[in-house]
Length: 301
Image 1 (cartoon, rainbow, N blue to C red):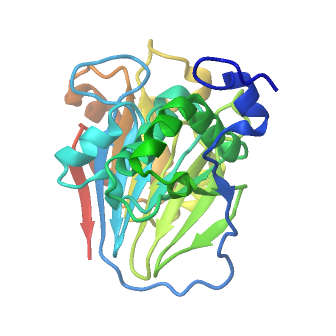
Image 2 (image 1 turned 180 degrees about the vertical axis):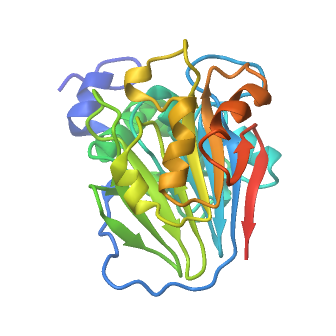
């Protein structure tokens, strides 16, 4: 292997197995859940898309479940948005990725590396995502290998970046400290592995769609949830073949018997709230929130 590069081996060689920091596959905890009546709170940290729109950061949602802090998707700026919510990246215990589109995973590396650099995190978060998530995490570390190595003389330990990774499949339910999350395969073809997630405590449930067309599997898994956080597309924008039209998202929420529907990942992000609300309320008579960044959408105790 060539080692005479001025800053170490080439990136391609790291990807063959020479990078210093690596994620590791973790054994998921499944089986009978011991759910508890934990407080469950949720914020929209980013409601945007790949389009750059003032006031809408990349897609991410934050859940506080008991003592755990969970981030679903790591769109651009998610760490800074988390700080604006009064929390810090080192507090994140679990990160879930719905699918590997850049607007949903762009800042995963920064979310992991920033607390390590600032020595503020005892251990990295557990990263949960579709098949290929471990490879993606390791490619992040490979891309930043020079940065990681440059910090070693200052006493940094690369073992602190040994991120536990769980790769999900349809229907997999993971149990944590008094709560669980189920992965639901949704319809975002040609993306083969796109997932929504349903979070449950003993008393409450929140479902997050990720990017998807109207999905029967999500409707089934989200039956009776307190909150359904779902993407939405306005006619004439985006790619309707793999998103959910504003004309359909209310029907999805009604079919799932959701108490509250929250719209996020709004395509486009500049339309006034009334345009979304007027159409959705034709088919859904439950509570409705048209999402904006940094909005708390539930506080379930």
